[in-house]
Image (cartoon, rainbow, N blue to C red; front, side):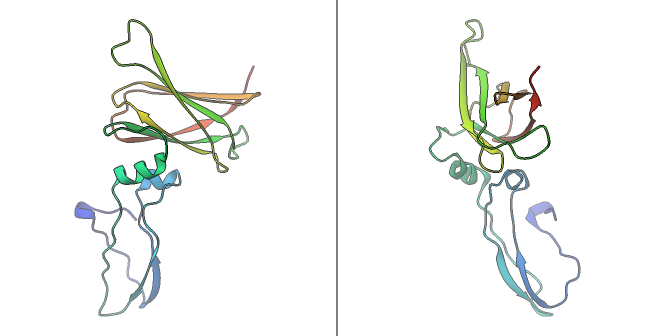
Length: 166
């Protein structure tokens, strides 16, 4: 279910009873970053509403970035790497590379590297906004690359599908 204006939403008619409700930022949740614990509630004929609170995307990203350098205004690349057969690619090096601002003529580049977790997910933080980034993943036998033009938002999601190297 997706919220409407003001964050409001309506469930379809439900019978009175106990329910577990979960709220999440859809982009972040797709990459395993959860913002709130499920909430148990009792719906009755008299009590048909609930208030749920979700931490801001900025706070959730800060938590997901952990020890990675991530200044205010930077972006994060959230992603998943899949093997050629579609399964999660674990322990794969993922690099995000971009040209350093003001250094276009010299060609100076910056690179951040993270490894995928046991579900093939990764988070690379500290990427400057309004910068084009090349995201690569590679093993000895497989590789994938995706170009992301001009990251505008504070987070962007990518999925890399590894293919056999020629």
